[in-house]
Image: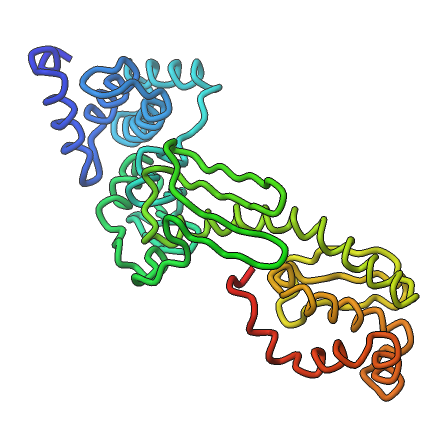
Length: 324
């Protein structure tokens, strides 16, 4: 402790961190814990302090036995701090390298894995959590395919998509948070002022906001349109639902309940194509297959124009601009 008081606190922290870089030492780990507990040379952080104390305790128990003042101090401090959560996510790295998760493993060394959800670092039982974040910061490649959009960003500042049923506007805001709103047919997504659109996780965050907005819009449009078509052609149905999981079809009909589930992506279809889709699903009241009876009823009730539109089904699949 004596040598510590003679040094500038910031220099001391650098010294102690260097001492823990390759396996660590009990004294350096203990001193780092005290630095983070008291805010000496670093920002005060009880989570980091607790983590250093836990690793220091394991070192002291392994190298000094169970009977020493440092072990008593560390056990008392950890018991006192039982309410302080272990550090599993260091927020200061979110903006620079994305979401970083550090987990304990049985490995002696560390491993790093990149996924679309973030960076996962596995560290050994004797390595402090903070070292895991240092690893992530040093080794995360910003060119990694899971992190960048290869220059082809899905959204950009001022992105606009207009359809018959909504107008989507995506733009940069003045705050550091996401905002979304619906005003009539206008849907707006505002992304943070410091967001880097070249990163995949930022694009996915915007897309999640877009999905939520368009789902709310679809929950208004689909039931209205289906009810309108049903009353016009005199064919009943059960309930109308928005399905966010359909990827290979626009909609499907459930014979047992007569419910109709429509893909969220269909909110981007032109109005007459959505009307055709509603007629198509209602015709399954007469036949579960696309047989002669199905198409006969379609022509009779839906009309020749919608029948021809349904015949070009593969063509109007190209309409949606976004894959929701």
